[in-house]
Image 1 (cartoon, protein in one colour):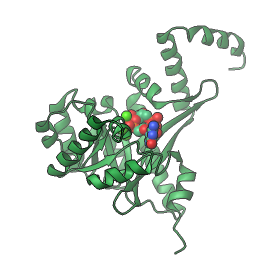
Image 2 (spheres, rainbow, N blue to C red):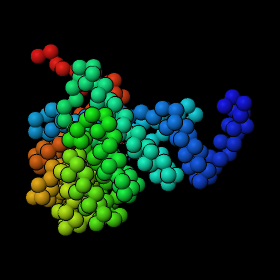
Image 3 (cartoon, rainbow, N blue to C red):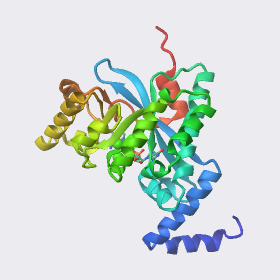
Length: 280
Ligand code: C2E
Ligand code: CA
Ligand code: CA
Ligand code: CA
């Protein structure tokens, strides 16, 4: 690495001029980060709005590259998807989450509730996806019931008939299932009924504007009512303020996640802050 540092750096600077080259650079460095064990998972608590207690957490990928700095998953996940790395990356996420659950447990910090894992559309397209995810969890001697797989509404609507089947199989295997970014993916009520999900996550965009935009308030209200009539739980994402939490509670939303409750943090911080048993 040292011998190519000078020229390589200039090349990198020039390459950043084009989007394609930027994506290639990202892909190359992501490959190195994955191989070199440089990726991390952060954990964000999820709360029961009624009882006000932690009921789980969402695992979120973090990448701090020595040259690029922090790169957002919103930027590198699409690159992993288009460069054929997503299945490997997705496997790593679930394996790391399993390792962490066992590590917390070994340290006397039991993680109650479910750990939410984001699953990409690419992973869903793999015909072996169910065995693949189940295999990782079983290898770690954990039950699939400890996990909540989050699949976005739009990824499910790419091929909804297949999504119906994949969800059916994942649910039968024991995984909890959530429809992520709900309200942005144009699913029909008939599909929603057929998806074997347990929960809907109301997209952050509606939650963030629900107290300033009457349309967004209506959308949030409608999603909560509809979810309840279909027997699905609701989680609001992106709750940043107490007045949003109060409004969601009043509407009967089950769970919430957002900076108001807790930011995504490294595993050790999460363990100390959210898992250490209280003295009383
Ligand atoms: P997402 O699944 O919708 O995750 C929620 C995003 O909202 C996260 O962004 C989280 O940090 C952020 N967030 C949480 N609370 C608040 C809040 O109160 N206010 C605001 N403004 N944002 C909040 P993050 O971590 O940057 O992740 C972005 C997206 O990248 C995720 O959106 C998800 O689609 C994807 N992603 C992250 N980790 C993974 C992964 O392990 N696998 C896959 N396939 N995708 C992932
Ligand atoms: Ca998610
Ligand atoms: Ca989401
Ligand atoms: Ca999102």
